[in-house]
Length: 235
Image (tube, rainbow, N blue to C red; front, side):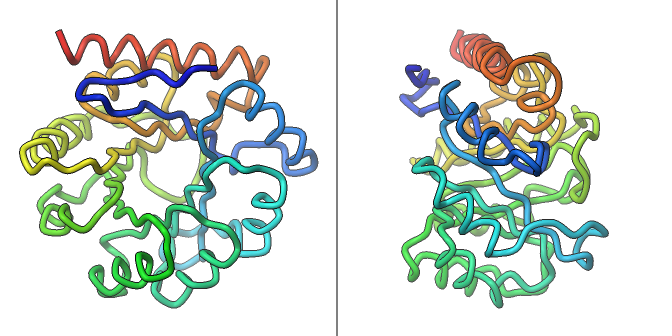
């Protein structure tokens, strides 16, 4: 399946979130999503401290890495991301996304991730202002705007984050940055249109990809929504 192109020549990518897949048949879910044209896979790492839930560790990332050549976007929802950057990179992470609200020094995390050969992103919660991450724009490969409160799948999209997406797009464009703007949480056929119109380029899709219906049809509809939103943005 061809990957669509957004305004400014940026690729628009869908990254199914494996937190929403059937863990008992994870390999099947990965193969089905690949066949349906998934551009990457998103893995949520939760430590039970930064967020109240506990999820994946490096062993799971390594198992996924062994089953796909698609890029792995690893979202570190943990208190001390610097401590685990190397472990997740060695497990197969292509992009390491840490939270600006975490305990580790952001620039040290970025430098370490890049030293290890990974792309690096910084995430902000829905109630964190864009100004908290803006000083790092020149050093980032991805800016992740959370559209739900991190910690659990299945939450509803928070539309109040869309002005942050627009502002981030404007400021990154003005700086000539090629960094992705990722949106994560409650991304559906309906909300993907608005997120793409606001300037998002990387769409984490959980329940909308894996829960209910055929994965191929789910991703086809999501991609069509992203394309509609991107077309609206360039008019």
